[in-house]
Length: 372
Image (cartoon, rainbow, N blue to C red; front, side, top):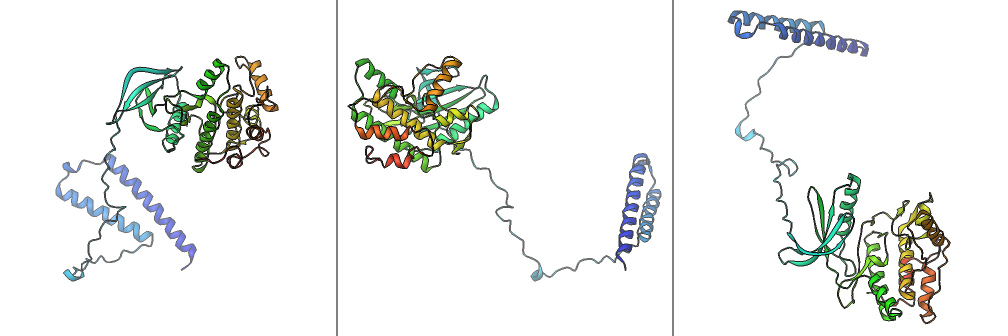
């Protein structure tokens, strides 16, 4: 039997099936309700439908086989009942893990345009934390998504020189982020005190703080995260004695090294970051973080920023940007600073990223020594 015939037969069967379906729908819409038909009428109607179906099958060349009742199996022949696989078995919903409570105190630690930082007590142990309460008002979905991404990245991190995120809570109007309470102020505070006293920062303080910053950066690199906003303000002392430095604020942090958008602060951002804001090519954030760390080291050694200037107006920002992209500091490092420290700053503040010292090279530099 030819393929053409089979195709024609199948087509004819489809046409008949379509006609039958259409007829059934039409009749169903206008037929007398079954409850109003006599028993004999219902039997005759059923017989007519069966005969019509047989005629349609014969016209289509379809023959029906004999229906045979299945053989009753002996008990020993009965197939065993199949057990549901783990994928098929109904799953019980895991109980939601209880979130530790946080209680805000009446002590306001800081305040910004859209956030407040309160002294708070976290969990059953009532650990003192800094609770950053961020308002959702005026923020679109993307901006709220960035905050959630910041939390997702930060909560993965556990290192002595990175501020710990203890937990976060979200309501309809706010997002609360509970962070370790840092009691020693920031590097900005420490430098301000030195300026007020007309002194340079103690050499031991500069070296100790920088080594701890490098330890945090080395850890971030090991977990494939870039910070993208290293600056004096984001380096704080965990204790009042100022012995343990911690990196904070992961709002710009990313798991992707190569970016093409500006991030960070103008005085600390690398030349290639400024260039990207003017349509420049994508850049490595790891190399940019090394530049920013170099600016921090210069500032601690000189008690002044290498590229200074206001940024209130567009013209001032453009002037500062040109300074950074040129890569020539406004002043030199004090003569009493170690030559090795000055050499390291020079290597970290090279404009061309490919020629700039890498983090591994900074860690291996003679002035750095061992990093815990």
